Length: 108
Image (cartoon, rainbow, N blue to C red; front, side, top):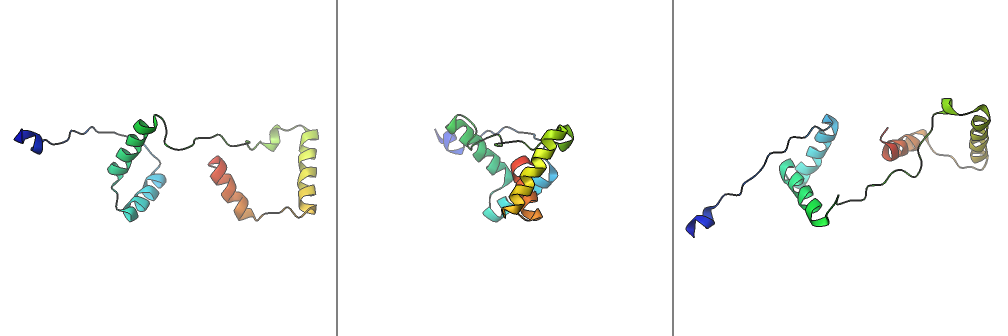
C-alpha cells in the first residue's frame, strides 16, 4: 500500500513537427502563462478526450479567394465593376487591414 503513495506516473513521448515561428510564438505565450509546452500539449489532449473531438471550432472559410488569372474576361470585368462600385460607395479598407484579414482567414 505504501508503494501506491510513491508510484510515479507513466508518460509517453510525442514527437511532432511544427513551423518554427508557430512554436516560438506559442512558447512566448506559454512562458507568460507559466505553463511548460509539454503541459499545454497534455491539456490539449485531455480536452480532446473530454470533448470527444477537437476542443475548438474548426471551420472552413466562408469563401475562398480566387485567382484572377482563372477568370473569364467577362467575370474579371464584373469583379472590377463590383470593386469600383464599392469604392464609389465608400466601402474601403486599408491595405494593412486587408492583409491582416487575408492572413487570418486564409493563412496566406
